[in-house]
Amino acid sequence: ALPMPDGATYFGSALGQVLRRSPDGRWENLPIGRLDAVTALAADGDSLVAGTESGAVLRGNPSTGEWQELPFRVRGIVRDIHHFRTGEWFVVGEDLRAGQLEVSVYSGPSLVGMSAPPSQVFQQEWKRALWDGTIPHVHLIGTPDTYLVHWRAKEPLAVYSASARQWGVARTPKKLPVFTGSGDGLLMRTADGSVVYASSPQIKSIDGGRTWTPYRIPGRLALSRLFDNDNALALSLNMGMFSGSQEVQVSRDGGKKWRKLVDMPQAGCLDFS
Image (cartoon, rainbow, N blue to C red; front, side):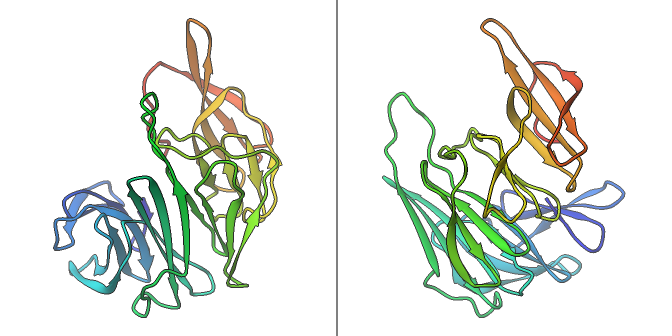
C-alpha cells in the first residue's frame, strides 16, 4: 500500500492496473497502458512510479492517467522501488531462474538517469526438494537512510548506508532463516523506518539494521503491523499437540511488552489496519 499526498492510497494489481482508494473509501482502476502486473509502487512528488512483473519501470500522473516507461529494465521482477532521504533511488529486481535466485540493485541520483548494469548483485543457489515446496525469497527493508537485504540462510544481513553510499553487513544475535513464501523470518519496520523487527528469531534494531537486540512476544509471530514507533498489533500462534489458538497481541512500548487483546477464531488473518 502506498499513501500519497492527495490522501488516497494506491495498490499494485494484475493486468496493468493500479488500484486507488480515495479518502472516502471509493475504489477505481488506473491502467498503466500495458498488460503487465504491477509489483512495486513508489511516490515521486505527486507522481507514481510503478515496477512490473516483466522488469519495466514507469512514471505516471494519477490525475491525468498518463504513463511513461523509463529507459531501463531490471532483470526479472521489480520487487521494490525506494527513495532515500539523500535523494538517491534504488530499483530492486528479483530473478528466480533454474537453480539460482538473483537479486539486482540498480541505483542512481534520479530514475531518469538510472541505467544498467546493476550496482550490486546478490545470488543464492537453490534446489527444490521433492518434500519441500518452498522456494527462496529475498526480503527487503528500506528506511530513510539504510536499506536491508536478506537473501540466504546463515548469512548476515546486507546493509546499505545512503550517507556513506556503501554496503556493509549486520550480524544478528541469532541466525535468520532463509525467507520463503511462508513468511519465516519475516522482516518488518515501523511507519517511519526507525525500528526494524525480525519475527524469527524475535530481534529488533533501532539503528537501521546495524545492531540487534531481542524482544519477546508469546507464541509464534505470524503477522504484525507497526503503526508507529510505540504502537503495534501482532497475530501470534500457540500450537498444541491436538489443537491451537491464535491471539491478537498489542504493544504500546515498541515491542518491549505485549498483552493479549483478543482471541481469534481459527481462520486466516491477512492484515491489520
